[in-house]
Image (cartoon, rainbow, N blue to C red; front, top):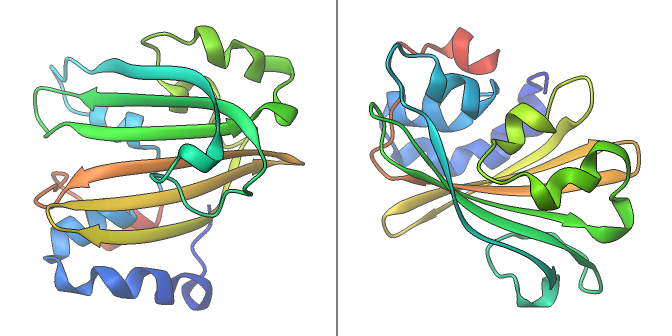
Length: 171
């Protein structure tokens, strides 16, 4: 997602209470999986908590979903030896599942970002942020033509990537 200042500044304004390194780590446009695996000896793992077909009325974790869609919901924890655990919730409406997306059900412990969310296929169109008591939610909407994937990544409030600058975060 190319950074568009006028489009994103209102969404990012909510993050000004965080320290600079944490804020840059949250607004980072680069793939999260690549960032987590970027450090030597990372021991990156995906722990699947839940993966099921669900009606999205029961989902409160992901915003901006039309109320009448049934789709595949996946909840995982991304863990490494160098950073705190990050929880991720994904929802893809069933009517958009075709091609490579059919394998979403059998993705297992592989990362969604490495498998589906490649820049040539799905592009990040919108990002929203929420700060709750001890966590920061980054809600992203990825699109590829009519296909859509909703991703809610939940970071701990003290999350901070090493060696990140404004230029690195804007990718």
